[in-house]
Figure 1 (cartoon, rainbow, N blue to C red):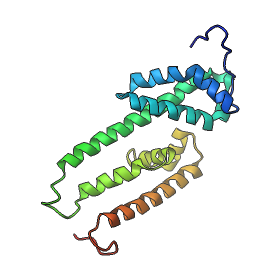
Figure 2: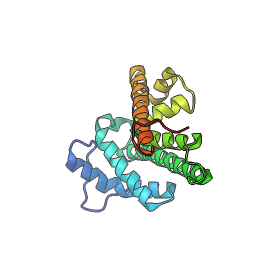
Figure 3: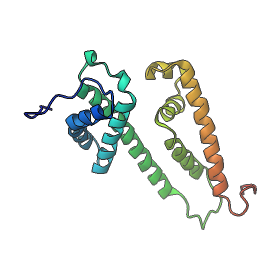
Figure 4: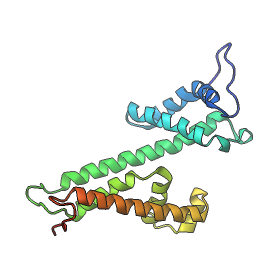
Length: 192
């Protein structure tokens, strides 16, 4: 993005909130335009743009000017955030199509396996980003812990921790959801 007359080039690093504002002013429109081209809804593009700059702030110590420009770094982050949003939209579409196939609750008061899977997908979608990605790679792509660590450039112990904590969080979430979907006393056994 060329700079207008009288406008200084933003600093090479994001060191404080003022420099983040400078970087946003310089490349926010570029990131938003990229996201709008990739995503179906303007609201999604705006959300992704915000996520990109939050991630840039959180990862500011990872930016290395000698490896590339700030714009390239930001667009790299944007590419990953757009991919995450597209996966989430796809997941939501799958859930909606599967919900349409569910029997009418009046006809079948017992939760079936499909409904439980939908609840699990929804709970998985609620996990923090990196933890969710690690679980998806482990269970959907059937990758080993070591392969996941290599693919995501994470320490092996971190991958194992993400899996253990993610599974614990999913278990707790499913227990809460099961209890909230039972009629009467939350401690009553679920009808089969």
